[in-house]
Length: 155
Image (tube, rainbow, N blue to C red; front, side, top):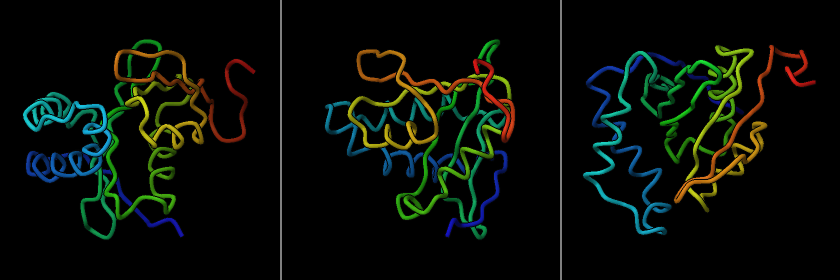
């Protein structure tokens, strides 16, 4: 059963717990490619810590993750989606993503995923397709949707 959740704007007090969570989520994959650096992780988390775009994910009053959606002119960039490993595999990630995606109908969604990370399967299940690559990341995009049961813009 998918746990219930709420999304709320992040607060400054969330920074350290979310930084720690991002390290727990990312460390194994970053170590695998020789890219884990705690100072770089802190810097990247700080740069993306924007209450206008970053939402905290809570279950039963407990902070369990975060997700950001940055609207651009022709798409929405999804980033900083970190979910407590203890909460993964229960449908929560898909439910959170669906709630965020529903706020941006009619625009394609894009995300960068570290090459070789197991999470790429999650994004493919959400309708994303690989569209390119960078030195360390695969680029994914999900075509625009126009609401539940409605066809994609390209259909």
